[in-house]
Image (cartoon, rainbow, N blue to C red; front, side):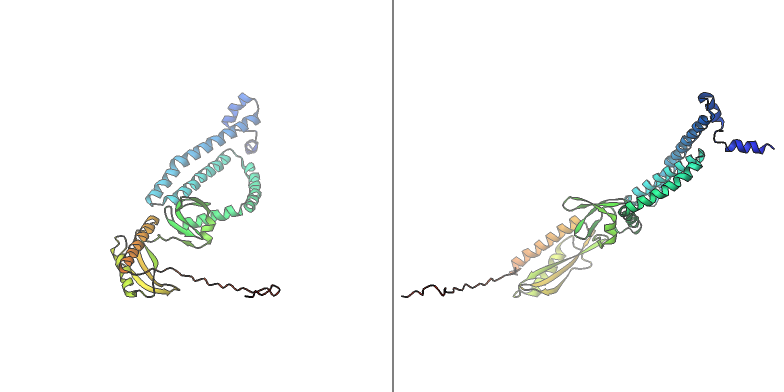
Length: 306
């Protein structure tokens, strides 16, 4: 029966392979030689798997992303996750090659307890991470989009799994937790190919409404950056305290924040100049303040006599 000694030798932690036999002649201890062999196997296995992942897996993923024309805002975090996965697999394979099974079992229990404590302490971080995943899945916006939420607006510069960085139109950089962008109402004005704008022109009650409507429509048709289809429209929408409100609706092709500001400013200026030429007034609210001054003679003071 030769199987028994062989099994016992294989199960003996102080018994190693060829490397251990060679190392034993140097260090003079079987246990130290076996530990050295395991350390060498760990390093070699980790290096081999890591190099395969970085030189083969990561380039293949990059080519797949290029083939699918994946946006760069989604490519960057996915590559980070892939690189982390390569390191994780390399460590797992290295532990297995070095026969550190018992060590892995004990570390698993410690890791579970640590994960629970970290999870309780990092609820907000985890919530933002999950929100970032949903941003990549749903794609409500991408890098370069102009977005608005709450009282903020700006252009998206970077999207990560925890925060989104937005450059405001005052050139301020906002670092916004992803959960704020997924839990609140988010507006993406330029998500489509066209953007509809509205502006209310106020004219006086004594002015010609039909003529003012024609001027507003004509200036919209004259502007080269305002779309002809759908054509601009003008409607009477409100009767204010001091003016009559005529709302103009028009569309911009291939909009951006800069185009929106420029076109709207040029259009409103052109209408105002035409109103001045035609004698159409744009009134402003007038407030009349009235007050009275009453004098009451003091009962104890003498009444003047002439």
